[in-house]
Length: 133
Image 1: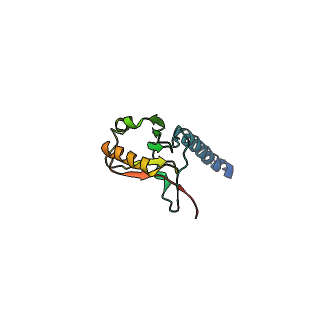
Image 2: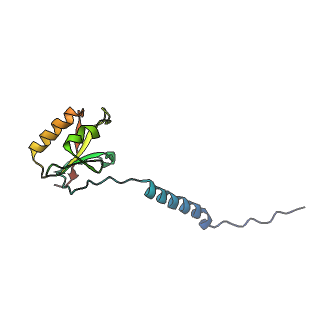
Image 3: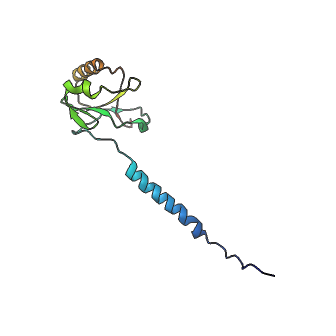
């Protein structure tokens, strides 16, 4: 009669090592594949809001407006005359997200909204930073 050799007990380290390897590989993958929000080519101080919404819906294509009226779309500076060309392929069902400087005058925003309306944008979201009251 052939007797099988006794099985050696497996240590818990052998079970944890593959899990550590997978988590490490996922960490590296998401660090390389993830894209952070693009910063505009000028400094912005966003206005504050007391109500915060989920910031996970931020997209990479944001229209940035400086206090002096300069514009940037998707991280690239644009002129106000080229706004309709830059937004020509913007989908109708999505609101355009605008990150404006907190010190901008309302007259500048009114002119910008008129230019956006003529470019075919019907809805916008103004992005703010959350500040505790």
